[in-house]
Amino acid sequence: MISTLLVVQILLTIAIVIAVLLQKSSSIGLGAYSGSNESMFGAKGPAGFLAKTTFILAILFVLNTLAMGYFYNKEKAHSVVDTIDTTTSVPTKSDTPKK
Image (cartoon, rainbow, N blue to C red; front, side, top):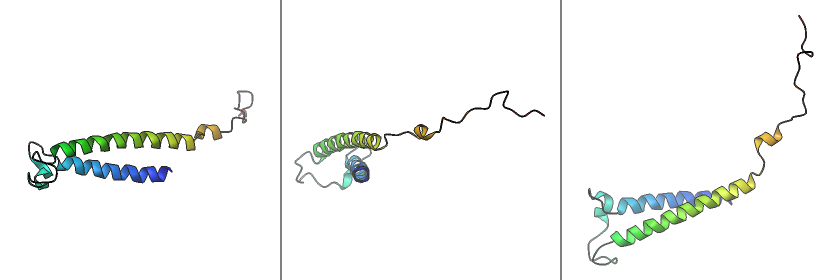
C-alpha cells in the first residue's frame, strides 16, 4: 500500500511542477508555450484552469502525504527501542575486577 502511495506521490509532484511552470508569471516562464487566446480554455487563456488544477493537485498532494504517514505508522507499530534487551545487569562498583 505504501509503495502505491509513494508512486502516486511522485506523479503528483511531477504534475504540480508542470502545472506551476505552465502558469504565466511576470517573466513569462513556460507559460508562453500554452497556446493562443483561441484555445479551449476561453478568452483568458489557461490561467484560471491552471490555477484551479494547481490547487486541486496541491490538495491531493497533502492528502496523499497524510495517508502515507498514517499507513506507515500503522505498519511500523514497533520501535527499535522495543527490541533492546533490558534484562542484562549493569556492573556495579563491587562487581568490577580489582587490580
